[in-house]
Amino acid sequence: MRDDERRRREDDDPEEEQFEIFGFGEEREDDDIERLKRLFGETDEFGDEANPERGFDKGRELEVRVTGVYERYIPGEPRALLVQLRDNLGRTVPIVIGPFEAQAIWLALSEDAPPRPLTHDLMRNILQRLGVSIDRVVIDDLWQGTFYAKIYLLQGDEEIEIDSRPSDAIALALRFRAPIYMSESVLEQEGIQEDYS
Image (cartoon, rainbow, N blue to C red):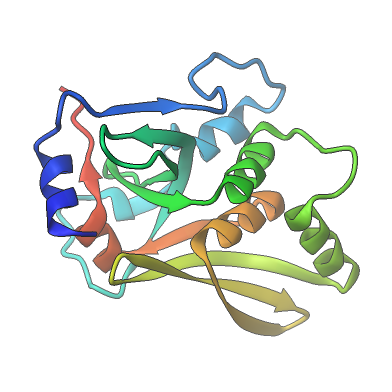
């Protein structure tokens, strides 16, 4: 992230607008309330990684939850679509994504099934037919403003590591209900501490 962008974000410019575009702000009725709570980070299922007294290891990976898909508008700059992730310590990390990936993540979160499989649904179907599952997704690096992720596949007893964009990895993880992790170094560098006061 550029220094001027970081300063603008830290100054909490009142002219900045951020709003949800896929309706996550509205109350939803769902038969699977516990699953939604887990997806939106409202449960205490992170274990002891939420203990702030623990010293962190730069390579440690913490589980994060998808809290929504948003459109951000800063006057004078292009609009940006974001997927926002949050750990159990209240740190949020927004990642800029494309419109197709935003739709794919939103469809997975809302459990809306398109009439015909879209790209990430097709990938899930292919993997399942081949007997492959997703064990986890890890967003493990940030280099010159670009996030990097890995998808860990399981085929029998074999684990296969695949390089991926975070947006694709997240869209697939949600379809497989696989956990999403982020390295502590990325959370420390890009995490925004939520203010609950």
